Amino acid sequence: MIFVDTTFWVGYADSNDDFHESARTAIEAIREGTAPSAMTSSFVLDEAVTILGRRRGFGAGRASKVAGGVLASPRVFTIHIDEALFKHSLSLYPSFDGALSLTDVSTVVAMQSFGVKDILSHDQDFDKVEGIRRREEA
Image (tube, rainbow, N blue to C red):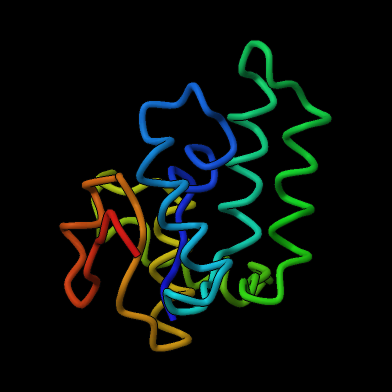
């Protein structure tokens, strides 16, 4: 299983995004079953919808459909950041001294909780996290 971060959902959905090609290739491989199944989180989807919804020519309606498509996918398991995961993320957040956003820390917590080691992300901040291997292809 591989965790899919915001940059890949945004890049996949927006053909004008700088990361569209790498994101499209990776997400299609997950959808077709030629790559491992994926995990993401409610926080990551929140972030992706917010980014896409603000982009010119994309809009809130299309952004919402992107998240709906992810939630409907049988190849993507979505972790909902509940109170326990959120509290754990908040307690761990200071240890990164601002290098990771709270959403990124919640990603680390979710990955650790489920034993996931690989993340599809263009965010190099994840390179600072011991035990996580950032990848830019599936």
